Image 1 (tube, rainbow, N blue to C red):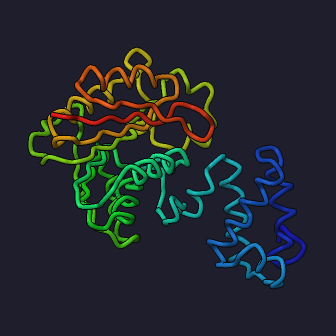
Image 2 (spheres, rainbow, N blue to C red; image 1 turned 90 degrees about the horizontal axis):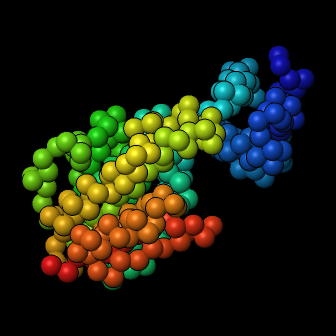
Length: 287
């Protein structure tokens, strides 16, 4: 046995010893208690006071978790789930783990929405976190979502079922497919690939090794590739006074804003995130 007792709380020092070179002490504690929550259904307080004894198979499970953490695999992949806007979402290597910045995008959209009797399209849906969360909060909406990755769509469909909402998912490549078959929408949203290839040198291994590159990166020489195509599509597919919302690269706020203005959008704004970085660009199409 790799620990001296089989008491659950006694595993915490072992986690700290093994992971000290990768994580800060408080991060290791948080990881440990997250694993306890998902694998044993025990809260932090429960772990501390319950004197829970583990079987050999349960001890082996923790050892396996540590081995995976030592490879920089995200804790969300190890437990297979994460929370986004208070809702559970399944995650794996086929989808990006939803980020807090995208929760801010949801917050902003909900704050600017007066009713829910309209239609929404999410482009590049990944886990489905954007359309599923919006549908959950705006139950009268008709929500659609597309993605180039069939495996990502499989995960998104499972997440819609998990959260008991109806979203119309379809497999499409916005750069190559003819999208004339799409209906008109009141709102189009996208958090497309916007990380520059040159940014790879500054990124953590838990992102580079475990997040799908297809959903992350864009060539340095054409950083607004997806924004240009989606903006063109939005001009075709938005209803009168329809709105387009983007999550953006912090360095391209002005360029993305100008892109929308040049396409005929009005009331175009850049919204900063909680760190004060440019994060959302949105505008209205008064056609």
